[in-house]
Each structure stands twice: as C-alpha cells, then as structure tokens.
Length: 396
Ligand code: FAD
Ligand code: GLY
Image (cartoon, rainbow, N blue to C red; front, side, top):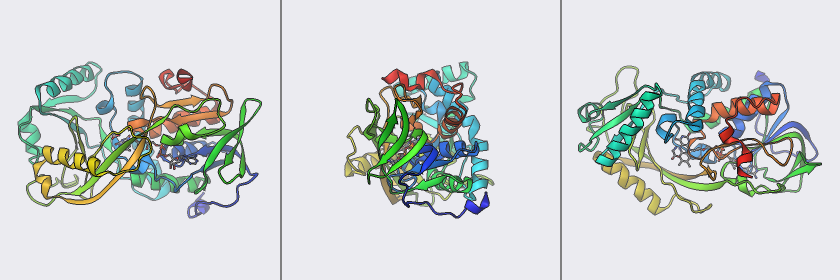
C-alpha cells in the first residue's frame, strides 16, 4: 500500500483504458466514494476537470451540523446524524492513512437569538430536538456572554447544540486526495468528462472533452454544482449552482474572546451562528465568516456586495471584529437540488450509472455517510443504506 503514497496525480493518456469504476469529480464526495470502493478491490479512476478538491469542498466552512441545518426531523436529519456518528472513525482513519491532520473538532454550536421571532423559532427547534432525545439546551444571555464576551450584548439567548462539530475542509480534501493515492485510486486532473457513453441502456464509458474515451463497468457522477452540464444522459441532472461567499478574519488580540483553556484552542470555543451569518473558528485563531446564498448561475465571486454583506453581519454580531485583519475572501458553488436533498443512487434510465450529487449546504457533513452508502451500492449492489427521499427516481 505505501508504495502508492507519493505517486502524483496523473493526467496521462487515458484513451481506451478500462476501469471497474470511473468517478467523475474530485471533490469530497467523489474522492471519499472512490476511496471506499477501492477498498473492496475494484480498479478506480477519478476524473477531475481542474485540480482535485478545488470546488465547493475547498470553499466550504467545514461545519458538521445536522441539527443546525435540519429544519425538522426527517431523512436529512437521520442521514446527517449517521454521518456525524461516522465522523470520528472516518477522521482518524483518514489522518492515519494520509499522514495529514484535518482538524476535526467536537466543539458544539450556539444558534443566537437577537429578536423575539428568532427566539421563538429556536425554542421550537429546541423542543423537537429534545423530544427526539438530542442533547440540546437553551443558554441564557449571561452564560453565552461569559464564554463569548465579544458578542453584541442585546442577546435574548441561544440554542446550544452539543452534536455540532467542525473540520478543516481544505485539509480534508488534501487528506482524501492522498488517501486515494495510498489506496491505489488513479487520479486524473485536467480531464473533463464531456459525456456518458452507453451501450444498450447501460453506461459503458466516458468521453472526455479532448475526445479521448475511457471505458468503465460503472460510473459515479460526483461533479457537484456542474452535474447538470454532463452530456449523454436522456435528461440533464437537475442540479444548479448556489454561490456562497466567505471571508477569513484574524481578530485583533484582546477583548474579542476569552483566552483558551488547556486542551481547547484559544479564541472562539465553538461555532456561532445567527440567521444571517456564521462564524467558524480554526485552531490557528482564524475566524471564517460566511456565507451568502446567491442563485446567479456560475457568475464568479467573491463580489464586493457579497463580501460587504458578510463583513456587515459579522461585525454586527461581534463589533470588535471591526479591528480584525481580512486574510482572504473566496466563493464556491453549492450543488443545489430541486428539493434541497442530496441525489444518491442509481440513475433510473441508464444501468451502471450512479449519482452522488446535490449535497447543497451539507456535503462536508455528509461525506462519510455518502461514501459508506455509495460504496455499498456501487461495489456490493446493496441499496439498504440509501434513504428513499434521496433516490434519483424522485426527480425524473
Ligand atoms: P465539489 O467539491 O464542487 O466537487 C465537484 C468536482 O467536480 C469539482 O472539483 C469540479 O471541478 C469537478 N467537475 C465538475 N464537472 C466536471 C466534469 N465534467 N468532469 C470532471 N470533473 C468535473 N457543507 C458542509 O457540510 N458544511 C459547511 O460548513 C459548508 N459550508 C459551505 C460554505 C460555502 C461557501 C459553500 C460554497 C459550500 C458549503 N458547504 C458546506 C457545502 C459543501 O461544500 C458541498 O456540499 C460539498 O463540497 C459538495 O462536494 P462535491 O464533491 O459534490 O462538490
Ligand atoms: N453549510 C453552510 C453553507 O453552505 O454556507
């Protein structure tokens, strides 16, 4: 296994080569599924149009937030919680395999209420969370402000979600890339899949935009926000890009947050979120503020408007951030589906063609559960892990 460790990603001539599985898209979803299937002994190629892991998976904030993102109990929450349950083992195994730390932190999240309506919405969420047996609590303002003295003080309280974690998603894609190589997955960068090729209603290969053809027994589409552009299908996939813009800040020392406790990173102890903004700490003291949600096609960001919005909301929540240094701003395209649910399973009209896309706001959270379910589906032909609400049939 170790002999693969330093093998670079390839972009050599793939024309005419055959693989048991070809994965389209080298984000967290494609890479983690490729790694999972490779473990079962199949030959696997990942085709990535640009550089591995520079799509939404790179642009994300890295929150692992099933309860924070679910509007109600249901299939999304169940799948998100399954994924959260898998995260500790997934993170440990990945770090060991790749030799890259991914900053997985079981930090918790506070959803802050500044108005009566926000408080009512959060208290409703608390009621169903407790009714379902999840560890959640209501924190009065004094308790929130004690730990987070930089917050605007006219707070009405906050919903504390214990099972809400974070990971450094950029380190995650680096680690997945490396782990794929370690396991013997072939990675081809700068290779755009133009169309699926079929024979007798079964997927049998991929035509690249340079005209080359790769043959495959099975194909997994994990092209994120670009999934709707793939050719060769009876219907285009109903995935559309939802742009998100973010800013990384370095708070000035003094006055914003308390000092760290032993074993806890200094700065913000947990993820903070209002209805308009979230602030996600990194161990090195950076604070990621995000994110906008814009349905503007593939119009590139970050835009002045988007960055101003994020900064306005961040400084409204934590006034002392006005003195923070702006380190970076960026944008990415979330893969949005018509009903906001992931699209996971076999494509209805074409055999041996599988979809793992549409993860919208939660592809980082859902990476381990998606890899688990798609690994079983693609390699073992077992559908038992797939929630019905995510099956592609619902959309065609
Ligand atoms: P991507 O990472 O976009 O990967 C798709 C890959 O496919 C890309 O590398 C692309 O170049 C490649 N590709 C496209 N077309 C082709 C082709 N024809 N041939 C070959 N390759 C192709 N999720 C969370 O869980 N927590 C968060 O905190 C969070 N925050 C977010 C914040 C922002 C600002 C954004 C934009 C997203 C956020 N998300 C978050 C969502 C998460 O990033 C996505 O759901 C997830 O990254 C989707 O992963 P993916 O692998 O499907 O897509
Ligand atoms: N999950 C956070 C975002 O998509 O912005």
